Length: 203
Image 1 (spheres, helix red, strand yellow):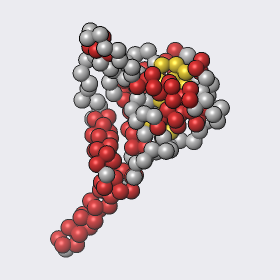
Image 2: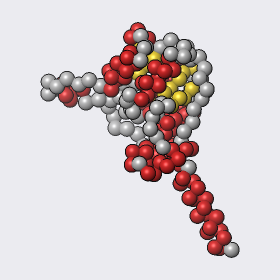
Image 3: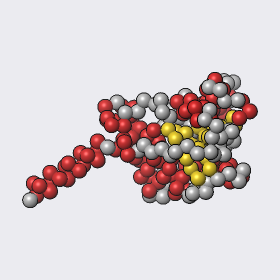
Image 4: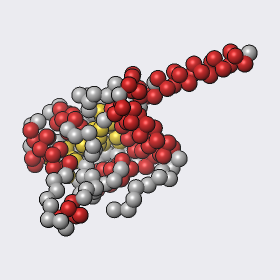
């Protein structure tokens, strides 16, 4: 009996391990929304996907998240810094998004929780009720969870992933970058489930 139970538990653990990457990926159907938002990271794939969505005329504007940067420290050394948001803007324009349809979000952010808070705040300021967020495949589940925990259903989130991104969810343990993504996402999900006890350093 104990051998049978151990075998079942081992099989269940193995199955869970193998599907950790696939469970992270979620995506909503496209519907008209107030804005398409490019989350920071994984440049240029997220911006390319946002441009692709823009061409489907579901929204008239694209917002770009602005990550915290070392610009101030470098400026004190007389070194110019060009951030990720600048290049995401250039990618969008290269893919046909007009410059006047692009807006870089004002507040620099350190993590997904801060991004979600800022996006929701700007949507509510504009009295908007739907927003499309574009991120990486492995990040979609955590984005949805954080949105549900911190924002709720108004504004409504439509989460989309970068379709060209090379993330092998079915064999996530084979490539170090994919394995790191899965571990990071599961830690982030655990942090959200626990009420966000881990927070970024003040900036």
